[in-house]
Length: 333
Image 1 (tube, helix red, strand yellow):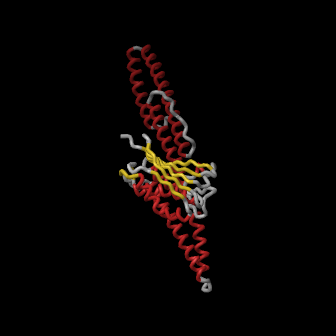
Image 2 (cartoon, rainbow, N blue to C red):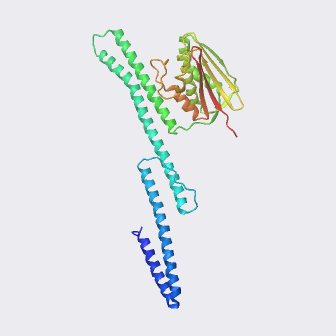
Image 3 (tube, one colour):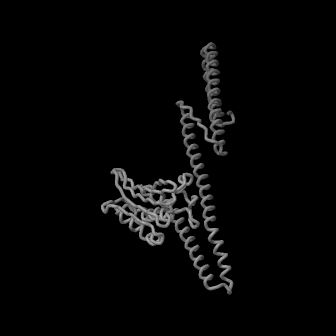
């Protein structure tokens, strides 16, 4: 404490003033001088005790900051007592708590990035290995023409799969970093569903699937038409892929005071209770996922919809089918 130059100056000035005061009192009356000495002693003792206590509190704060810096959990140092030091404690606690929360978020982001890179690497590894094998086989001049065409077709399919994966990841990344500006325009629900259905009609015809579609012409929502169509398409595509030959796909629309809803149901094998909580997670592949499934379509749909005041939910029963409900929440004006 006494190493502090400000404390040294204060003690020196106080001592000089005290000596001068005692000398004046002693000259007036020696009894008054004795009282003056006692009073100075009491004041200096009180000052010493009070200053020592403040230094101890400041040392505790310094130790607290050092512990936070070293990564220890943030402790509550607030004492809810009036005073400058208590205000400082409250402010320090708020700052350290904010820094601790930011540190936790950064750790989660790093882990998320590591997991994502691992998943991407896993998704690319299989098709690349397959293409390397087929490319080596194509180098064989004695390879029959039909096999050559077969391998070329498989390589093209794998390249298309990689292209779709990279494109989807770029779209997801743009949305997550909020670099995509979604339009807020009034769009027809029926028009969006028709646009989403257009590229899926051929796969449905090949699987001889029955389609029922019911939606009013005068049903509109606010959103970005192109992005929303992509979200709806991914949900429909998931239902078509998991519905067997001769199955049924039912699409309907309804409006409530709170939201406008698109209901997409299929007569597929259903989603198991173990897989259900994870189907909207990126790269998650359930037990019934196809061999070519990447596990990114539903994750993209949810991200797109949640970025536009909408969301998608799932209900499923094994052996009966799955129902997806896309809800566009109405804006409160």
